[in-house]
Length: 58
Image (cartoon, rainbow, N blue to C red; front, side, top):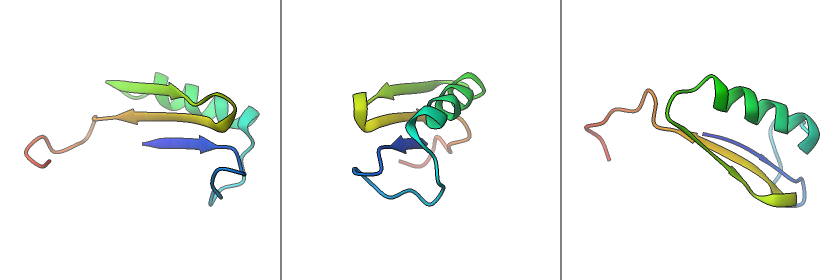
């Protein structure tokens, strides 16, 4: 999972702005199979993938 959020929403361990973060979201989504991208408007974006997950675990 990769999330890029507005600094007012949550502090990030890596300094990224939403403009630069959108490129990261697009890269992650295009290079990960079975990914779902969610745009949170001005608050940020989120991408989730079940790739590399153990299907026997919840």
